Length: 251
Image (cartoon, rainbow, N blue to C red; front, side, top):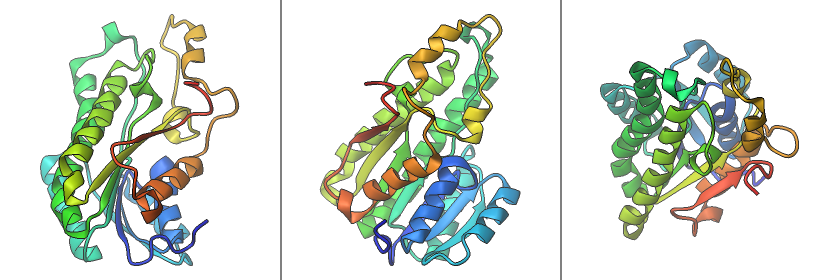
């Protein structure tokens, strides 16, 4: 581990209380970063604060909801104020549900699109003025679902495809101003979201082969390590890129 890559860097991580977001907050703080971890779950944020004690950097926490425009405006403004500036924004907050597409309600579709895609857009929009000032960068969480058809998760697939396209658009639009935007596409990672997976009634289990790594599931720390590289100065020439970390799922 490059222990000082994020010294003097201020980082906002959404979805920071569990899974990939938690691992990312801890990794970047361990490398010297001042991290603001945002999540809707206050109890898990409190646990994160305890677990961050003794790291070379720091983790502050903020309860916030990326599904609300006013909420995002507040959480980004408060993060920038408390941290002093923003150098990196990592959008991890997301939700996933499983159902046959013909049974997905409009409310459920809207919930996933709002949190996964619109929330990512809103955080980026509000953070961009701060990141332009520091020539910072954005790392968004896409998914292998954005690259290959995935059954029983239509809204999730659509939202992550949108995140992938959004990231590329930001990279092109702001490259000349010194702001980078990249994405990470995890495959099956051992997180609370994937632990909640269940086959819809009547689903063909053989289709699981399309979304299953050839070895064991990855761990949140694997994704956090990749985010740390992409967001650091070592990743300075990465812009508009998507990094697949999927245990050969799409190979």
